[in-house]
Amino acid sequence: MRKILLMSGLSKGGGAERVLSTLANNFSENGYSVVFSSFYNNGYYPLNNKVTKKVFNSSNKLLLLYDIRRYVRLNKFDVVICFMYPISYTLCIALFGMRNKPFIISSERADPSKPTHHKIEKYLRNWSYNSSNHVVFQTEQARNYFKNSLKCKTSIIENPISDNLPEPYKGIRKKNIIAIGRLTEQKNFELLIHVFLKISKEYKEYKLDIFGEGPLKSRLESLICELSLNEVVTIHDFTDDIYNILNESGMYISCSNYEGISNTMLEALALGVPSICTDCPVGGAKMNIVNEKNGLLIDVNNEIQLYNAIKKLITNKEYSKVFSDNYHMVRDKLSVKNIGGKWIDLIESFFIN
Image (cartoon, rainbow, N blue to C red; front, side, top):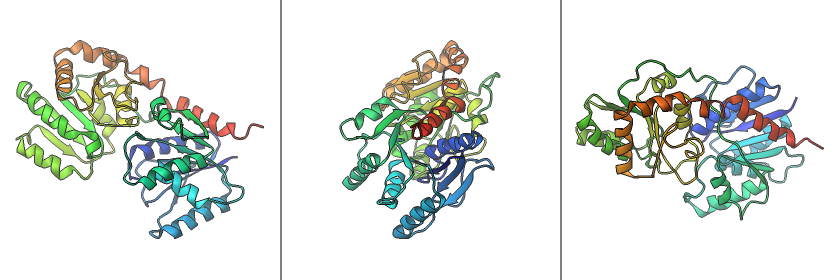
């Protein structure tokens, strides 16, 4: 039985952890011995009872590196999978010079063209990827960013959609817009709120529900008050019932300035929720949305296009019906069975003589 260590832990409840948790469960069901590690005590996404949870929680960085190195050496893992480059370079530093190291798979989960906070981070990212045996990207555009700097093997594997997703809602959808994500500049919720101000004046029955937590919460709440939208715009905390709430919503919007592949976008598409998404440079949206067939693509930070797209979905119910009927375009392609199978093929490729 091969032993696999999955490493996550940048943000509790983040998209990368959601995907890694799904893969951990899939690997364990396929006969692997799986350890899911993070850097906080309480996980956000469920793991089955076959998956072991390991927490690295030392506040001392040198002790943290020692703990990781010792744990990997004692448990003799065959493969370690790291999501997000800070986890990759933390692992590679911890295992530097170690004999009989496991195979290392790093995975880029965001838009790599966005500037990092420090030049050293860019160096460490490239160094850790080249120190890995394989790097997995979500899109071809993301892989192309590294075409002149990576010497290791690479592949494209998209995110899986959770098996816990309910069947698409067949009733009359609510007259609301739902947006989900961290309350950060990246998600561009300010643009959505400003556009909804215009929509609310024309379609008074519609409401905007934003689900998320993050550093911009106070600023966004102040903006909602300033625009007198308190009665129709609400910021909610993350909830375990988000799938059912999303499933019954009138439309889903992702107006991010940049993304890898948005998990909530994929889930909305797989539920048949009429969706509007920005066509971010990395290409995650355009890989899964055929414009006007299962969703609408708009330019990044384009207020006019966002306004017109919302109006189109409100006034033309045929669009909404077509999008709902085409939910299978994403749901079948990105099933856990299909995506988990690609990861398992990659893992097994290391052991082919």
